[in-house]
Image 1 (cartoon, rainbow, N blue to C red):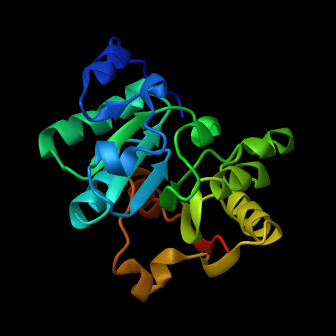
Image 2: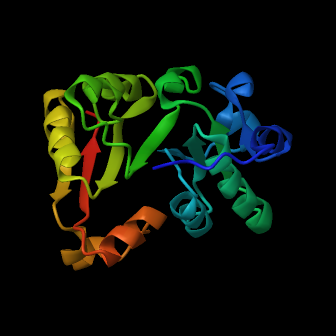
Length: 214
């Protein structure tokens, strides 16, 4: 995907009350100082244009949400949605996922969402995939035991890699499907992302897994 640079995006994000940057992360203080309540903290890594995380936050006011996106021009779109909707339980972080352990303390996060992540198809780039053993090790440093990770993608190769990576890491696979839209029960609470809407319209099958850190 080619990203269109938006002049002044970085400066707009730095002025927003909804966005935290790499220089102002609230490690260990998200619940107490940012949301000012001890509710569960759920994060989405790679929030794109924000349809998923903004809808999820609006539907679940008793949960604190953080949307993480490294591209300023992309995050600006979510910020504008948040400015319009003013959902109190949603904040945004501009940062690279590789720095996730700089943003959260051990046991601070209760759930992680990964939606249509970059597949990094070349073998030499496997460690960059958000479901690689390297990233799973990072997640283990911030998640509580018993916390879940939910992952959706239309890329079958990435999905197969993710299933094996999660098994090898010792996590428990609670749910695996290679065709989410054939599962009526799971679709009841499904929130599609912008990519998901496009891919399903094109006839692509959506893969989904739910795993628990044990």
